[in-house]
Image (tube, rainbow, N blue to C red):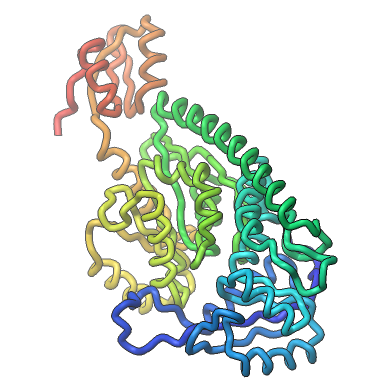
Length: 442
């Protein structure tokens, strides 16, 4: 839940003008300027800043010293002074020198997009693992920014956080302390990864399969998670409303079960420090049997958001186009009328059949049952269905089958249980040799 605003801020979108027909820029990665600025303002509000104004400052060429041209820096200086703000948010990645020079020119604190996203993650991470991951990302970012700041020697960039407070004045000592802390955090996260591997190995010993939700922040992943699992994970119309991963049991239409994982949302220009730090968490996506890519199909930049998510998936070693695990979920169709929905259905039908697409509304539940059936079919495609018979008195065998397979049917006849089960290929031979199981006739 949001708190009271902690400060007044101006959000500036210093967007580089793109030439029409630029072959180096993928068409679907080009973002709407107003949507980009709205997103940046939303990020600022996510840390309880009062956004006094949000303005676009077109850039024809990035200046090494201040990112913006001298004339634009002077123009903005007047606006900043008139509004009496204490923070300027630049919706771009600034070098340490650019950040320092802008702070000197405007006599105010300056936060770039990377720092802003890290600040949000720092506030939202609730678990010990999440806190470790965010602090590691913070420190890697801070280490490159131990430069003289705009208030002489009373404030140095160092420590944890960006929003103010004096720090150490000895830059060399800061670098050494930060380096030591980074080493300790990396060792702690290795232990986290080892624990996750143990948990994952435990899940692989039982018949539950893994389904992971991914998508752009605020695409409706947590709302869909709650709808599918009847859970109560926080879901709000807010960027990065949830950070820490959550696992819940997912009931499939024909009685089977899977585990559903809700992961952190992605965003354009997601800091590389965060992708690296959250890799242990995102391993749930890498190991998932089915990956649900949730898209806010009502957003004007939905194609660009899709491109951003696929970029991160590529970094995780998942090919969004060539992976049989991907299912696209076009969410928020409740925002369209009947004719618009028909148009969407036609668009989805014309797309590549390699990645199935389903129109749903996580808010109202429309289309969710069809999606669940598709998840079940996708999970079943990698498993074998077998028929077998077990003596009713053999409790150990029946228990083993329930633990290691998905029991689809079980009927008692003449002192024996006739069973239909679904198993991974790794356990198929065990059932055939031990229980005389036979493939179910098509």
